Amino acid sequence: MSVAEPRRIVLFRHAKADWPQVSDHERPLADRGRTDAAIAGRRLADTGIPFDLALCSTAARTRETWKLAVHEFPHRPKTVYEERLYEASPGELIAVLNESPDDAQDVLLIGHNPGIQGLAEVLAGQAEGEARARMTERGFPTAAFAVLSFDGSWKSLEPGVTTLIDYWAPTE
Image (cartoon, rainbow, N blue to C red):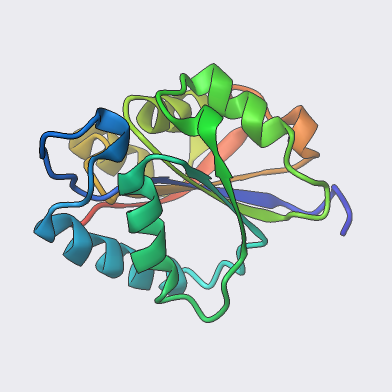
């Protein structure tokens, strides 16, 4: 794969979590979250993006979201469960993405707010159609995702270099 080919990043917020008496890291999905995760998985599959790599937070709700969503995919990408994605800032998320292997063209990152929304806002120097307006209006609710595209290597990923090409939230 040439670094001249556009790369895609999909930023996917975990689905709606429940609030049982467990640590924040161990919170499971709520019933609505399980439903929304499967719906989001179908929508992600419908994008036709052949993900090479999925980076998933180690929190229970992100792992459960990923398990339900990936079930809808035509093929399962390599998955890396990454502790650094839990409670990560946009800068920390960029640092993790900068470490993606050069042979990964399309990467899915499953994480948490406020980091996921902040990362989408920081990375998107441009936007196609009404994607930015929809994302600005809706924010980044649970199970939402944004699709961004950029040219260059993963090491060159930095604020403002991507184009927001799609945005979806369960209520759309």
